[in-house]
Each structure stands twice: as structure tokens, then as C-alpha cells.
Image (tube, rainbow, N blue to C red):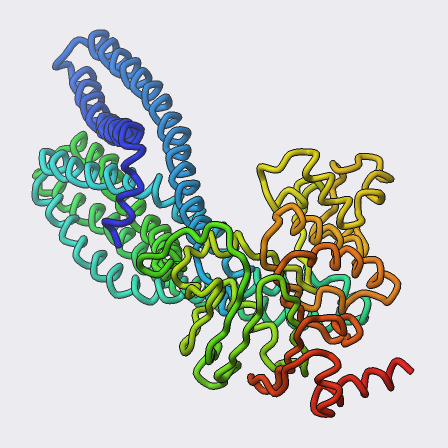
Amino acid sequence: MLKRFLSYYKPHKKIFAMDMIASLLVSLIAIVYPIMTREMLDRVERGFGGNENFNTSVKFVILLGAGLLALYFIRMMLNYFIQYYGHVMGVKMQAQMRSELFKKLETLPYRFYDNHETGKLMSRMTNDLMDISELAHHGPENILISSISVVASFIYLSSINVWLTLIIFACVPFLILAAVLLRGKMRDAFQRSRQSIARINASLEGSISGIRVTKAFNNAECELEKFEASNGEFVRARKDAYKAMGRFHSSTTFITDVFNVIVLIAGGIFIYNGSIGFPEYSAFIVSINLFIGPVMTMINFMEMYQNASTGFERFVEIMDEEPEKDAEGAADAGILEGHIELCNVSYAYDETKEVLSKVSLDVKKGQTFALVGPSGGGKTTICHLIPNFYRIEEGEIKIDGRNINEFTAASLRRNIGIVQQDIYLFNATIRDNILYGRLDATEEEMIKAAKRANIHDYIMTLEKGYDTEIGERGVRLSGGQKQRLSIARVFLKNPPILILDEATSALDNTTEILIQSALDELCRGRTTIVVAHRLSTIKNADRIAVVAGGKIVEEGSHKELLAKNGEYAKLYELQFRGNS
């Protein structure tokens, strides 16, 4: 894990080295102050004692003070460099990790997103990486400065009085023991705290995205209760984290306070015995901060380390997820003709429930093939399996006689256009959303696609036309307008295979009629699989299959299925009566 973390320093070796040099110089300058203090006190004592000319002593003291002031100015510049460029390095590392994480998320299969909430993923990309960035900057710097300061303070304090120094450093094992014993509890507590923050983000993302539904059903109190449950869990997790942190800090601070008591008692005894002079003792008192300061820095570092290490573990957890991979030897599909075959296909989202059981279908090139049946029967699952969004456990799916695993996922999906009931539009312009179908399309091609989708005339009534911002998920458009925009996107893509997954089921009858003409135009000359609840929309389909309980229970044309007087006839009769 550490080796993996350190690898992110490689692109920033130069600035990292300069940051460490600056940190080293800062720690060395810190040692100068007690040395000069000791020298000043010694000169002052000699001047007042008559052992040296008083004016000479004063001049020397002023000269030392001026030198010390110059060093402090240099330290100010070094601290500026450390704070600015060190943080910039940390931010660049954070950006690199965020970029890698985003790229990784783009490669993960559908199944991953079935089991991970958006808000929790966002928490990992923001909060976790921010803490990692802080460790990336302050971690090496704190370790270097603290280590050098501890070693230098030991050498310098020993030069004043070795026995007093050994007494102080004898307390160090107790500090280390306390840190080791309490560190594990603090790490676990901060891990739980991070998980609770992720749950809050997930709750927020869901509630804010569904705010219109909340208002429509007047369920603000319900959403508040759900949020407060997550918020309460966060408070409890943070309380545990702060309790562990409080124990850690109070214990380690107590030990450092003991250092001062020991210095006072032992120093007093040593002065009484004549083992140490007053100037030396005064310098020792000043210099003890050279040791206590780095110790406190290391204590604070432990808290930062716990935050960042748990964040990095969560980062690595996603980075180690198995990405969506093409089968070995997969090749570019080129331009497919569109003959689709499902041969004894079985599939289950989890081990507890099989969604499809030995399903076989044969959709000829250019044919319109409709899937009907009760909700949960497996129709949408079939639509997800054809573009290879999920890998089947049993059977095979062929296009133009070749198993879809022989194609790369990108080239397979390039040949398939999908229009769904739940349309996703990006918070961008109309132009951007249509061009998402084919990013390299020309202006003329885009406008032609919009015209074929019967949305161009509406776009031209807008003040900014194609450059109109449509808001989050296309909130500024009606349901029919959003659907026609998604159809324009597929027109631009121009795939040989089309999947319409209940594309008009959420629309009113008038809007459906308008959009149906665009869909009829879209389907022309393409192999089309249509999932529909309204049987009136698929009467003219070449073939219709009734899917129920994960199986094909009937198949035929509209007339053939009505003549069988089976499941399809029952569904049709129910809808006909309902419409009447």
C-alpha cells in the first residue's frame, strides 16, 4: 500500500526534493535559536561578571540578534515555499488520483453501479482525496522535520548535559507505546466516520435529485427523517472517532507535560549539585521545545495519517475493482448487418433469483421484433444483454452469426442505438446533448438528425436555439421534448440495430403519436427490438414475443398470437377493455 502511495510522487520529484530541502533548512534554523540563546546568556554573564568588556558583549549580542533575524527572514521565505509549492504538489497528486479514479469508474461494468450509490462514489472522489492530498504534502515534510529535530535536539541537549538529556529521552518509549495502543482504535473509528459521510452524500444525492417528486407527494418530512437517520449515524461515528482521538491526544500530551516536570525537578537538583550552570540550564529549558515540538507534530501527524490512510484504502478499493474487459481475441465488429440470435440464454443478477431461463430468439436483419409481457418478466434484461452490458452465464448471443464476445464492447455498442423510457440528458446545451450521439458530426448532420426527430422546429423557437442550456437531466424540457432529443441523438449515431425500451410509455397519447412518427422513421431499415406495454404501438411488428417469468411463453405476429387466444390475447383484451 505504501509503495503504491509513493508512486504518485514520481511526476513531482523535483518539487518534492525542493520541498524536502526547504523543510530540512527550516528544521536546522530552528536549532540555531537555542544555540544563540545559550551563547548570548554566556556572553551577558561574562560581561556582567567583568570577565569580558561589557560593550564588547553587548555588540556581540546585537550581532547575534541581527544574524538570528536574518535567519528568521530566510525561514519565512522557506515556509512560504513549503506552504505554497508543497500544497500545489499535493493538489496535483489529488488531481491525478481523481483523474485515475474517474477513468476507472468509466471502465467498470454495469454490475458495479447496481451495487454502489452515486453519493458514496462522489464522497470518495472529494472528501477522501482531499485528506490524501494533505498527507501527500504534510506527511513527508512532518516526518523529515520531526526526525531531524529529534536527532539534532538529542545531540545538542547532550552537549549541555548528557544525563539530563537521557532522563528526558527515557520518556519516549512511553509515548510510542501510547501511540501504538491507541492508533488502531482511532483508525477504525475514522473508517466508520468516512462510511457515514458517504451515506450522507448518498442520501443527499437521492433527495436533491428527487426533490420534485418529494414536493409533488408532500413528503418533505419523510425525506427529513431519512436524512436525519444518516446524519445521526454520522454524529455517532464522529463521536467515536473524536473519543479515540481525544484519548490519543490527552495521553500523549500528558506524557509530553511530564517531560517539563522532569526537566524542572532534575534541572533543579543538577543546579543545586553544581552539575549544570544557570546559562546552560536556561538554554536547556529553551531547547527542550526542540524535542517537544517535533513530538507534538508527530502526534498531529498520526491524526492526519489515519484520515488519509482510510481514504487511500477506499480509493484503492475502487482502483482494484475488476474492469469491464473484452474477451481474449475480441476484434472490432465493423458495421454489423443486424441479425440477432439468443440461444438458450440464462441470466441472474444474483444467486438468489434467475431472471432469464433458456431464452431463445431469432431476430432477422431489418426486422422489428417486439417484447411484451408483465413487469419483471425479463424484457429489459434481454435489452441489456444484447449490448453485452452484463455477461451471460449460460447460452450465447449472436449477431450476424458471431458470438457477441468475439467483438470489442466499444465496437459492438457503436452498432446499437438505445432509446429508453428513463432518458438521461446532460446539464449542457441542446447541441451538446444531440452531438453525444456522434461527437465528430457536422452542424448539418446534427440539424438533419433534429429534423428527423421532429424537434428542430421547437429548438428554433428558443432564443439561443441549439445553444440553449437544458438544465440538470433536461429539467427545462417537457417529457416529449426530452424523448425527441434522445431520438435525435440516435439518428445522429445511425446504428444498424435499435433497442426501444418502453420509449413512449411515460408519454400522453397526443405526445406519443408525435413521437411515434419519429420512431417509425428511426426504425426504418434497422433491426429493431421494441419493449412495449401499449400493445397498440407494436401491432405492426414483424414478430412479437411474450416474456413472462424469464421465459418466452408465446411468439408470432399480432394476428397469429390473437388467433392462439393465449397470453398475448389476454393482454390485448385487457388493454382493449381498459381503453374502452
